[in-house]
Image (cartoon, rainbow, N blue to C red):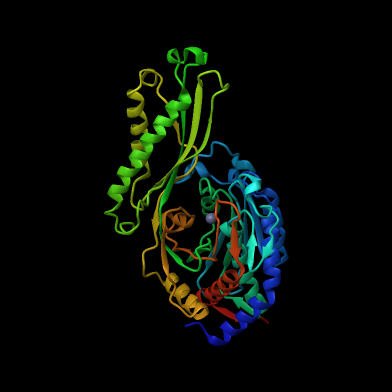
Length: 428
Ligand SMILES: [Zn+2]
């Protein structure tokens, strides 16, 4: 178990710093760091890291050879040169412990209709022990927890005896290329911890995610003679229905999966954006639907892609117009594998002991039907990827909020994990 004296010092330090941590999280939320618009926040974070005496490396996705890696995902709607990553490194003078990567994503998903929010989504409003806003929970709370876990060590007069990279990345919500870019930049460690809002649970398994854009053509005619045209919006609707049926079939097979067999319909399909048509009195000549579908750990991305393309092609063949004008499928984002953190790693054991010392309970495990960045560490670089962090609600919805008591407790468990994983010595 963690040293009780060190735990007590860290606990006092987290407590003393907590007003500053809450302010830090408010500051993070006030940056509307939507996809492609993260640079101002990454600049601010660079200054924060530099102010702590960490070596700062700020680079864009265009600065690393993304194309060279088979697990880079296509970026159709976003310029890699405008997508910045930040790595703050605190080096040990005489490294003797185990090194660590702490990583959080700072990209957020769109806030949606403003009138659905009780408080403005980028205000960072605090009320009754919750901090509100887009990204407050997913995952700027996690970013605050990892930075202030480091601060707690410093405040307590403890210096880690191994190198630690504190990384803020983009693209977690669309490709994962930000996390991959830090690895391609050369950062490595003996373990990686990603404090996504898991509510103090360890993520045992996450699903993969694929993004694709279907584009369907139509024949525009005056609606007075609609029967002579072809309506691209209705054709897209038919394709979406076929993809829901395909998903239901895939979920039947999922019932045999070793990790997902007890989860009802773990493969989720979502048509998330639709565009199409030009005029209410013309049959639409075009329609585009941006879709997301999940896959299970162990499923092959290319096979699942083929399955989607086959459904779209087969459905088109049943239609006189579409059989001659087949819809296109563009893979425009995530081509992400699922990942299982196999039980039994030393990193997980150390985290579990830190969690137990703070919460007084065993660290629960969760199986999630969403993706996260740990796959890059665990699957392709042989680095155990721990996904464990604070908690709240409303991710990707409205009135997203994070629980401040949970944030404080998780900040302490991460600080304790750092102390035990990396080792610490007294500051001189
Ligand atoms: Zn997230």
